Length: 507
Image (cartoon, rainbow, N blue to C red; front, side, top):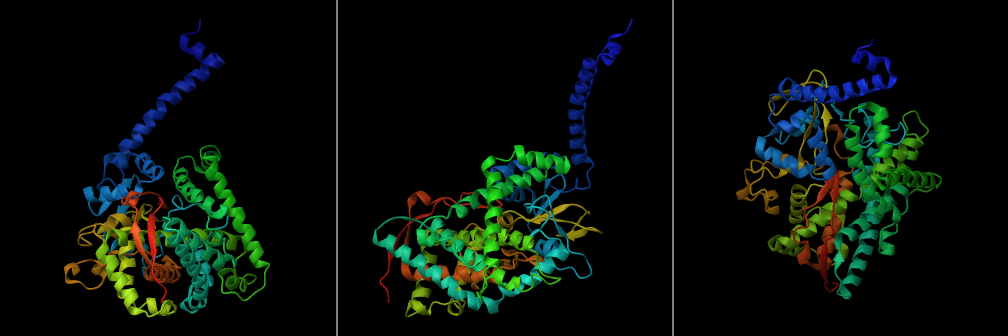
């Protein structure tokens, strides 16, 4: 006669019951063992941080999906110091020298690669300049660098002027109607139109229609989908599990936004490449090398255009919106900037790139805005390669994901005096801020992968803000007083910024 255990094994349903019971027991035990190992035996066990973050990646992923990672990292650094263990294999830093330690040039040492589990995957097997490995990045950057050079920037100024002129015209019409305006929308309209023109040779028509192009409206869902993709990439189980979760766990609207963004970019690229002209746009410059050994394939051009549309518009609009907000909230800064711009120029036609670059208070206002509200508020992780590295005086083992937290760094009183106050004077040599560590501010990153579009972004910010201050007085709506309290899914999810504009008489 069979024992109860033998009966279970001999019965196929009994075997399934035993297997299920075994899995239900082993999974919690395995998870518990993993937690114990991560906290007490892991190679990062000596680094400070909350035990819950060391135990598993769940708290980190929760902050990503909630859009609060930037504020959580600042809180953790305030509690635990200059380096914090934010996940079992992840460290966040906030010391000034950590910028060079993680992202900078190291003679004779290979560049630390980007953490593939953080960055949004390109469609297919093609990577853009943002996601490429060292060789691919160097090749793409060499092809793109002329299109972002100072020489080309002078040619692109006329395109900037077209869209800034149209922005001013629309704002004057709103001011005449005494209507409140949402500057977030209008700065986005302008920046998307400009980047569309510079990449594809034609704008999106946002300013002309006074509304978002459907593609542009969809891009905001695409940005949010990047955070979900980030979280899914960090789930255990490899490629098969990731593809399954992308299909069934990603919200349908976000998944559609990813696909639509790619397909719309593809159509625009193909249209531009079929057009022969001598315009100073990015695709035109790289087309000349397309069919050479070092040129980019059409798929690579599409992948890069996908990223340029987002990186070249949304971040600039964020800084312009934040600068307008901080100026409204700090009347002393607004008055100084008005005095500088309105006192320097006799007529609006004098406000050009070469002249705004000589306005010290304008430059200081934008630097302080980048410090207070960095367009990319969370760290961009790299993987430490052989033989390990020294960051902020601490040895970090091979394979660890490391990053600098901009929000924690820029709001650290050890780096900036009165860090939560908007004080452009800190960039003008005022003795009160003599001990500020300006090198801690790196909104465009450092090293071989620093932002290739830095000059274009700064030019657009300076010219637009100067023209807006020349033409209008700003009055912030009281319901926007806490405007900077925002979620961030890699980039900020900006709420409306309602202002009343008073148009000044034309000179």
